[in-house]
Image (cartoon, rainbow, N blue to C red):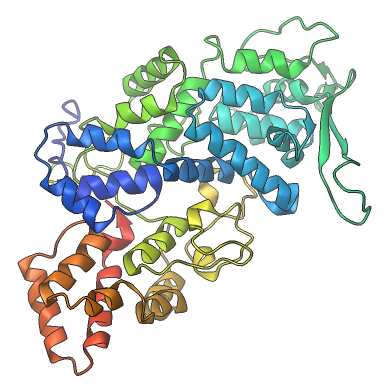
Length: 484
């Protein structure tokens, strides 16, 4: 920033920090009591302690399993309902238990057996042919989009057509077959069994040459006939000789916490798309590998930094900066997080078809619940191994949902909602207003906000409806709808 003559923004307030941290780590809002306690705490290390406590909450496992399920393309159209539940639970357990990321990826890439009893094997049910597996694996764990190299060498990029097909060769012997034990009824689609054959090769279509498995931009190893190629590939992928893995994973986590990648788009590492800060990316990647791919420790490192804790309010020198993280990124809450935020603020849970009441949107196994609010706000269909599938741009349909859509209005009018309980408890008007602000924005109302809100309530013939107007207005503010 000094080199660019950019002055960073000030640190965010405690109210902004607690709300940001809850949203980024657990996909939910802090309760009013949690916000009040944090704001009153005078300890100098309270932010670090908050981060540690959030990493141990069950919602952390739910939320980060959702992020991985999206890019792994876990959906019932491909792996069946039983498959998505099993795969989600497998991911969630690894996230919650903080299994080193290299071990999780090794388990995923070398998995065999029934896709119902060994959920990791669904990776090979979702992407079946060698070229699809090569593209998916490179994009997820190298941060490299190889698709263009399938047909030609790009004149300005280092990934060649030979690289593409030699990467695909690692998966040439992976095969699937129907698991007859999973469904005795031929009309019912059950699990599949993933296994490794003794034969199978990949041919480069332009040269007609049979491609041996080769590490990307690296050596061609000697593999014995009895070895599963995936074991050799996975050992290299997560090992120190692979220059891509640590950087790709660090960049993806940075993106989820900061709103933008050091390399952006997050899965598009290439010569013509350099990092915004090479030293930062290299330093984080080295530290991640040194600390045995500990995801929670990586998150702590980022979130305890001044960079993460900067305000979203720009100054004169950084107002045009969209690359160097001189102020916090402001972004619309994702579909599931926004729906959960509406539920938490109104204290009215959403009922999803086929799932028990109290199931949070971030706990949904896939997007096939077909909830209109979630679809409007960009819930992905999970058809692409790309973060870009989750839409983040606002549009008219979203505005209509928030202005007069059934989701928000039904929760506002529910007689047993937060507003109903506050009125039933005979709270004063200032107490009611502050409770609503704490629930929605993690802070009490300011004097300038109290005057118009209380004036509106005072003028209302129907006090309940007047308060519904106030809560509706709070939930339609940018402060509520955006992570900042």
